[in-house]
Image 1 (cartoon, rainbow, N blue to C red):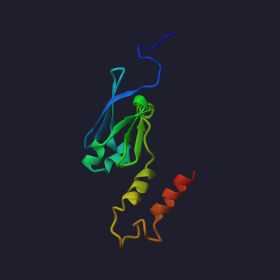
Image 2: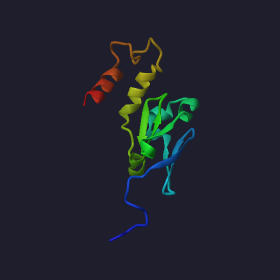
Image 3: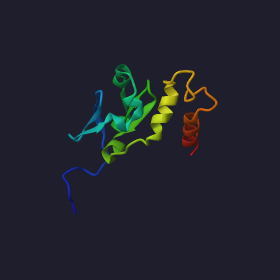
Image 4: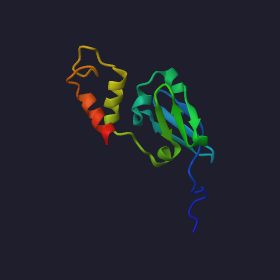
Length: 123
């Protein structure tokens, strides 16, 4: 039984549009998916030029931002997949956005962020 006019295959992206607060993906089947940029901490905290430097990967199966080492799949966008909040802390550590004297700086021995990020990547 067919319940929808939309084909049940994996979605593919034709074009991405990234604004200050939204990621929109135009799909080849005519749909557009728009999600808050807050779902993707690396994009949220990136500079505009880093957000603008993207390319399609896997024949439209996803979007890659080489400056950010970020990949987002069309399937994940269509499912509403959100990155875990702990990704924000890992991203903050990666960018070393805190002052060097801060206990949260990635080079600090007491850096709780580095421990959290390590535990997440070790899984």
